[in-house]
Image 1: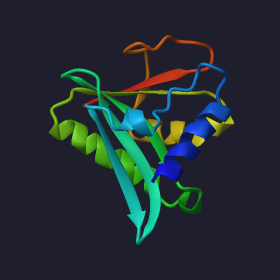
Image 2 (image 1 turned 60 degrees about the vertical axis):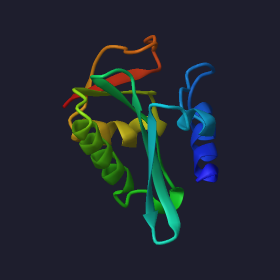
Image 3 (image 1 turned 90 degrees about the vertical axis):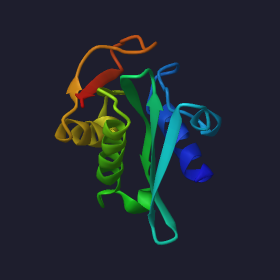
Image 4 (image 1 turned 180 degrees about the vertical axis):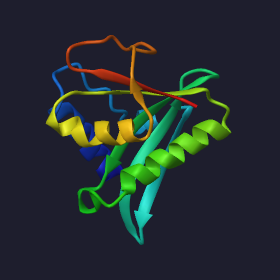
Length: 139
């Protein structure tokens, strides 16, 4: 799992302007208030995603990544569905996310929109720029 997380952080930094990548690294994913899920295909790690509690009402979708060997096989959709269900079970009222712009983010943006997320305002400590985007799902 460490290898996929490192690939995720490296990829986000490569596809984002300096100072605009907010992917959590392994230490940050182990912080209180962060839950990480993994999807497996037999013994192969297919993907990861995390939910970070921001307050009693809001969670943030963090660090979604599908292994390159499992792209376009429904892994991200399954993980996202699992996180949305977990957020509802935990009584959260809103799930938010921050993501970038450009071709590297198009597939993720399509999935978020299909899942009911709508573009909105910056949240938590994020500051809006021409690069980043914010999406929210009312639960």
